[in-house]
Image (cartoon, rainbow, N blue to C red; front, side, top):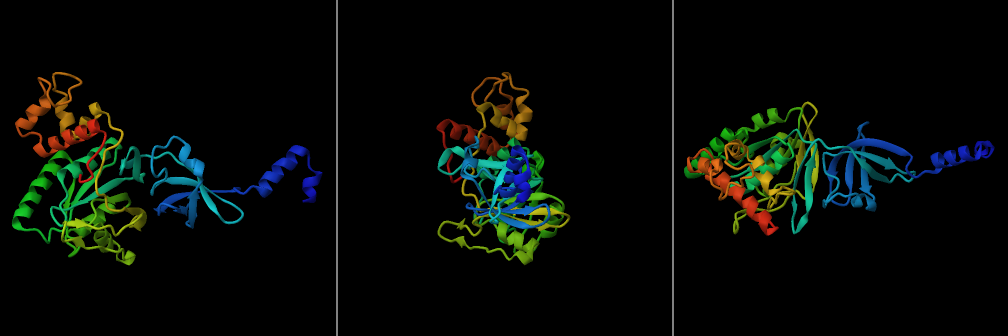
Length: 336
């Protein structure tokens, strides 16, 4: 410290800040786990550091229950006591977001900086509604995240259920969403999923009970993620994953595992924009008589004509109307 005494006043101040600053060690990294109270960050030199966020971080205009999400690139500062705080988030290339449960004016960011999402769905045990699928797809379209549909539990379905599954895969494949038919339990189709994951950051999402954890165990058996049973009374899954976490896969890829979603409320969509996020509705809307057509009651609506002529699926059109109705009511129904 004798050198500090000999320095000029301004130099002494600078040296004091550098020597005693509690946040002099700044590093960058990737958020790989979020428990709600703390975040696990993998630094660029491959260390894993437990971090918290400072209270005022939430006040920077972020209308979200979780301003930081798994997949975020962040800057962290580590003080002399070894405590680490996230101080900055790098710009996101995209993210998946939904309306926070019971907080209609706030959002919940599911994951950030994604190359693709695999929405795991089931025809039964439990049943995933087309409204839920379409709400998820619309939100992904809004934030530029490519989605594949993974139809799980094909080993359990009846002939009638398999016929319904054929209809769903034909519908969504025709619209432009790749579809996989798998059984995470017996391994059917899992190798195709593994190939599609290579070198990409992939979010796994879906209802509780659709088999996300079983599928991840089939891909990465060393993780041994806890799995759960289906409620026989309600034919619904029960939460087994309680926080979001990233797992490395081949060729520098990652799987992001997230808790099951009960309902998917779309967030921050204007009425006139909703149709843009349904690929086939957007395509036909160019032929509507009015540029601001809502595709509900206007004369000369090419979208309603396409529905009547079976160029647009009735289930997809119903999902479109469902989103508009919920927006008007200012809420969403959690069953979807």
